[in-house]
Image (cartoon, rainbow, N blue to C red; front, top):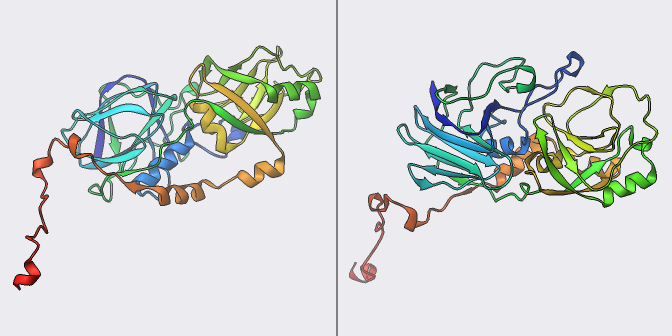
Length: 338
């Protein structure tokens, strides 16, 4: 079995996949990758039939090497990356050989970058997932010196592939659908919420992020509200009217009123927004939200169709002389002489 060695860990790094579905009744939220789209992108680049477990790197990566030839996909928040000093394109899959050093630096924009080996990480699973759920003690941070087993990749010699760059890493417009508690907010508060430009506050983690604004958005009819099932995307208001958007490791039950829920397609924009990024919300009807929903299997198929071979810049190829560049060259009169 191949492995990924962590020679140096710099950011908050954990093993993540798509999480554990179906355990809300037992008090366990889904967890998994903060940016699920990033794992779908990695699967598309690696030719996988389903998302694979990889490393989620918050803020920065580190220094890594592999024990067998494999491809690695780099997706999510763009980070500085190089292989033995040669710069690597982000949102792409690259071949890596034993002995080469893969360096991943700080995020250039966004919050969470992903490193996914070609066969996926093969760390121990629990309840059909390898995802660390740090807030409740499932798994642990990935630290310097760890060797992480990987499933063998079926085609480690495949050429490098890339995907078009995404624009979801600096905030932006996010779509929200009404929920069962939207009516607890007055029409004036709802209108103010959708007219406000928010700033992603410094306070935030894998459970959720706070949004800053000059206004407050209290629900005057929420007194005595019973705790209810909550989930990723829900926009809760504290008693003072401060909004929080719940994310991958949120609790399963909450008592704060929710003005609505961010649709799944836009949750990566919230998760990736760095502190200070501006966010604005658009209100959708349930029918509009339903029309935008796409199964993740369909998203993966669409991403696969947009993958393209990477074209290397000759000026950046330190091994240029090792390539056969003149095959097929003729003098121009070959047919006349024959």
